[in-house]
Image 1 (spheres, rainbow, N blue to C red):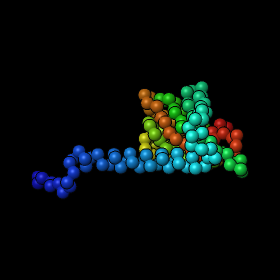
Image 2 (cartoon, rainbow, N blue to C red):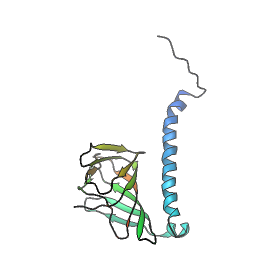
Image 3 (cartoon, rainbow, N blue to C red):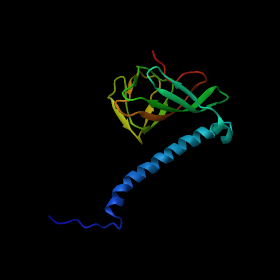
Image 4 (cartoon, rainbow, N blue to C red):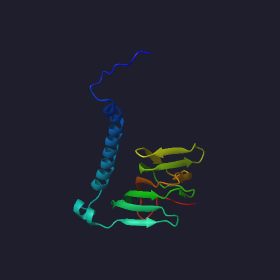
Length: 166
């Protein structure tokens, strides 16, 4: 069998690392964009935002939701950036969302299914969209040993929750 000749001036290790580096750069740019959007919509200076205490809630099954940023505009719409952590093997009950949510998986694995659709799986570095008004039958961390962490950005009417359990 003839041996393939390499045409690149990079080492094999460097060539193998390039896709991982590109993915990491895309992830960092996406996160920077989300953080920038949250700051841009805020009427508070960055120094005040950094000094503000985070609003964190923990559900009985250990799901932690930390509101990193919340901005209410003149129309009463609350724009939120939330860091959510699911313990290993934990899922949410069937629910729906009043508005669209944009999610970015930071760590772990998420499984999600809306009524009438196939189960979808998302891993670190992937993003997905929560649908408004449709029954979200499954959302869980299927991994029994690792946590799931993701960023969620959404807008709701002031005081309205994003997760509504029927």
